[in-house]
Length: 128
Image (cartoon, rainbow, N blue to C red; front, top):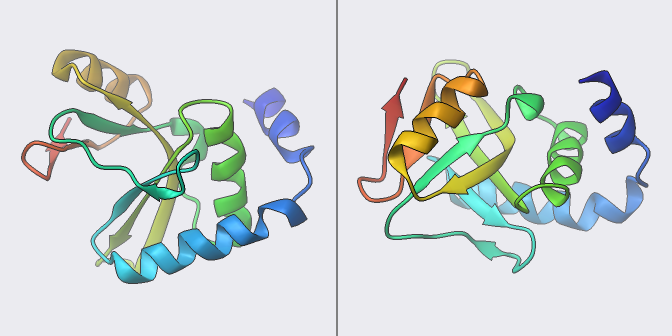
């Protein structure tokens, strides 16, 4: 993981600030959560399928955390997820992946040590 962190941190941060600002604005408008596509600059929506956060980007809250997630997402599926935890009052950001198969999503969720994955069909979490 350290090699991934070092690789990701080498990209210039100042070029990411407009994306950070956009993602924070989206989070303000979507208190329960969202998935954002960096390639289209739009909310990512599907009728079916699952969103799984990458373990490498867990527990990111601030601008630096969002930048880290952006850099990671650019090397993977170009997707950023965000959700608000009402218990801690923190808004979490992650680089996320989308898969259509439920069994694969559950496997990837467990592999990435996630508590839950998001189901687009039910618009609810599946706890692992």
